Each structure stands twice: as C-alpha cells, then as structure tokens.
Image (cartoon, rainbow, N blue to C red; front, side, top):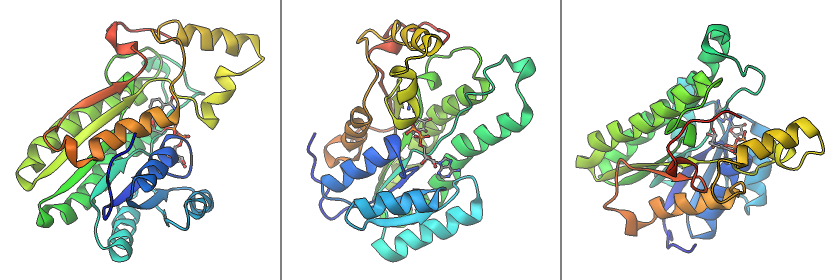
Length: 261
Ligand SMILES: NC(=O)c1ccc[n+]([C@@H]2O[C@H](COP(=O)([O-])OP(=O)(O)OC[C@H]3O[C@@H](n4cnc5c(N)ncnc54)[C@H](O)[C@@H]3O)[C@@H](O)[C@H]2O)c1
C-alpha cells in the first residue's frame, strides 16, 4: 500500500521487532520520519540503524517519567509528532489459567503495559498535538479485545480497554482536529509466533490447527497486513474516520463467537 506521508513525523512504540517494526518500516517507506521506541534499548537501536539511522528511543511505556522524557526527546529531535502508533504490548504464555488461578502480579504487569502504557503515551503526545490542532493516533489492540476467549483474562481486559480508550479519546480530541483509531490484529506471524505455526512438535501443531480452524482465510496474518491497516489510518485520506476499530483477522470476528486455543 502506498500513501503520501512526506514531511510527517511518527512515533511507534514496541518498534524493536514484530508488528511494531513492520509498522515503523512502512511509515518510513511512505515518507515519514519515524522514531522507533522500545523498552529493549539495544534491539531498538538495531532496528532503527537498519532503517537508515532512524531515531531510536529506549522507553518503558508503563513508566510515566520514561514516557515523558522519551516523548520530549522525539519532539526535540524530530520537531513534532504527527502520527503516534501505540503498538507495544505483552501477554503471558505461561499463565493460561482461569481467573481464580490468574496471578495478580501477571494481571498488573499486562494491564500496566498494554492499557496504562497506551494511556500514558497518548496523554503525553496529545499534549503536544492539541496546540497544533492536528494529529493521528493509532492504537493496536487484538481481536481478543473485540471477541473474547478463555484463559487470558488480563490481556483480554487490557485489549478491550484499548478499544474503549480509542473511542473515549476520539471523542475528547476531535475538537482539536486529532483522530484516534485502532487496529485489532488476529493471529499474526512474527518471530514470537513462528514456532507455533511452523513447529514439528505435535502438540504445537495441533494448537496451531485449532487456532486456524476458526480463521476463515485459513492462515495467519503477516506483519505487513497490520502495517497496511496502520498506513490507512495514518494517511490524510482517512481524516474523517475516528473512534473506529478495524479487525485485521482473516474473518475471525465475522463469526462473532468465542473460542479457545
Ligand atoms: N502477534 C500477534 O499474533 C498479535 C495478535 C494480536 C495482537 N497483537 C498485538 O500487537 C502488538 C505487537 O505484537 P508483536 O507480536 O509484534 O509483539 P512482540 O512481542 O514481537 O513485540 C513487542 C515489542 O514491544 C516491546 N515492549 C514490551 N513491553 C514494553 C514496554 N513496557 N515498553 C516499551 N516497549 C515494550 C518489546 O520489547 C517488543 O519489541 C502487541 O500490542 C500485541 O498485543 C499481536
């Protein structure tokens, strides 16, 4: 997908790898100057270096003072932030248990990063967009923020929260010419999920098959599929759309049912 982002600046969180890195690359390829932010300093430095020396910011999105200084650094070095992509997020593979067994420490970690982190970065960047009366904020949720599953209560609560936060901030920031939208990825092939989809292990194979049996298109998404949806929301042509969540999920949510995997 090609859009014209010449002269625009962007901040992408969780840009060291996976979907975030693909989003940052796609924004760069379409003309934007992009700041790559991530909690993993060396990894984000590598990704930014690969992208012809883009700006790398080491920042934990769940830490208010790191967010404040990270955003200030981007504004200092790029001049302003036209596009914010709140992509950084975590889940747990270890604690796939019902709520009665779900550890409070894991709940706090996931909600703190996925939901509170999105709030903190949005709050800080919105303060710089409001006086300029323009800006585009794009949040990354999950299909599980739209249709639930069992055994992932913290992730699902946090990602559903992002869908709600998208609507709330879209309403609040509209009068300042700022749009806020959300992309909800389905199962996406990344370094992290590759082992599930291409494993020789019988149990993993069975899990991947179960997962894909409810994806009408029958295959996982690519990171570029997510980046294209973000480009659509980042482009000036989508300027009349705000508060929306776009599921990029191979048809998963079209059925509207819950499932386990
Ligand atoms: N991959 C999928 O199948 C899938 C499906 C649905 C939703 N998502 C969402 O898409 C986003 C990206 O997923 P991914 O698969 O590329 O993940 P990933 O784990 O490959 O990458 C996430 C990046 O975020 C960074 N990060 C983690 N905690 C951070 C923090 N506190 N502050 C700053 N950076 C932090 C990590 O260092 C990493 O570079 C996440 O929000 C995830 O929940 C992914």
